Image 1 (cartoon, one colour):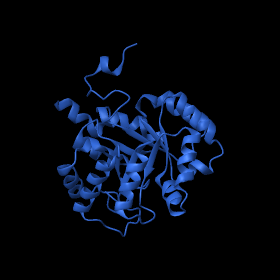
Image 2: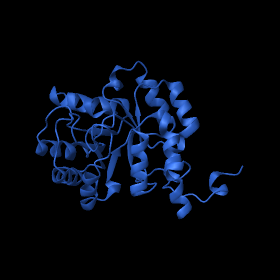
Image 3: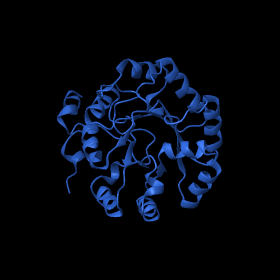
Image 4: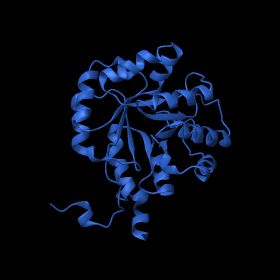
Length: 255
């Protein structure tokens, strides 16, 4: 059967397992049938799935869900809020044991809900990285806490040095905090400051809105790492990445 690559000249995409061009999907409560539907339509484009905030321990289908993602070879992690709660309640050891019990080998470490001293956060990243693939997160979920660009750079750099595989640039599922303004507009100056110092491949930019995804693909190309993508938007995002949507089609024509 003729494929899209046979039919058109499209940008090359990194192949799975990808280190760049990652699509990180936010699962807000998929049923097993929903996982199957997502994989049928867009499984080739899903690299990592996060069970949002604390849904992973509230859902009634955790074991079945993890088993199904495992069948498809998709790594899963729990939302950073769950890790923060474990830290706040002095139950991180229990949380780590739980991750081993359920067979989850990725962990998100954030400090957007509770205040964690940054030196302590670096210690936690270093410790967790000995057992897990760590994704740390920089930026607050509180839209009144504005952090200077140099602090973003400093925190991202030190968290990578501590052992984080990728650092997530915070935006929440709303796309209206962190690297975005209240209305969802990208803080372009902040992004420029960050990538001037740090390779964008090391960062996973949360981009839940289509216009945000388009901006990052135009700025960094098809293999930019994007996170908090809704399951229903995975296929749409892939068309944005490779120029099969009008928002980015001009770039493929010009190339």
